[in-house]
Length: 446
Image (cartoon, rainbow, N blue to C red; front, side, top):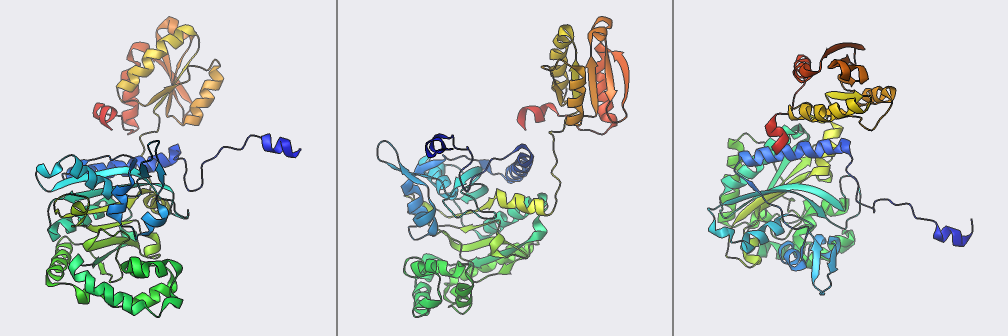
């Protein structure tokens, strides 16, 4: 092949690095997780919110912090045709707070409890559990400050992880990073500690030293972790109010039976956090396989232009949760398995099957028919591939005699029944096999 032919050869189309298709088998996991989150959040009084995929860049610069890795390195930012800077949302809380302010939610009964299940975007190095487009679910309580609310957020998270079958895989890590006032002296002491130790620090932490020194404590590099163990401890600088708040938070966790580990190096990666922070770490891999976390952000609403308003929230990575569910071989309940395959031969049979298929579906029977197939042999072969328990067969003779054939696919046995009784007969057979029908509510509202 010549160079010219090579240039003109169509490029193979595939997804960009760091993004992926969610194929039907994996959709089962996403659907199951969404159902669990919706159920638990509704049960707890949260209402769902969806914010735009992209926002004005200021929304994230102002909230997340200019000194964070997300703002400096990971945001997908672009100019629109009017030269306005827009950014694909890298996290959920900033957009929720912007919506709280823009739509006057402060006038609603406080606190306002909101949850979301949405895709997010970060230009990050793709690796296990870390993608450039990823899904998160999260929930926020805005408008009230009480350590009981922090404990409620954590308790709700544990309930969801328990429903998903992975609670035992993770340890709850908690810490208090104090308020802005009691952190000021600590940050000075922290910078003084690291000055002179630059040779032992990674390049990222060298940048953080003068921009965001608190983030150094959260670095995953081995040398930086060793330095962090001997660094000044933030708890020694907490004001009395922050100490009391954190102590009550721990007491509430104990009251609801939650075990936790106090982790003085836990700081989270976003500038808006104050007081309570927490994460769920893998028992074996630690922070390298954290599936989610959150904390209190009492200054964020004011930072984004509102009145001082306390808030607390959490977010979880759905892809990371799925990886752990697969690792544990957790079986996902599926309602995609078919009950009935309808095979037909001849135009008159096909006409009768059109209504039959939909009547079965309306009664909650998951039904598929190969209306485009001419050969009965090909249709029965397809029924085998769908792994249905029963196949209904309607041919020219059956149409003329007003009957239909029911074939038990596992036994290879079949019998003839009156066509007018087939729907009730199918429902009876499905009940005998203890197979679940779709209820009308599931069909309409699932």
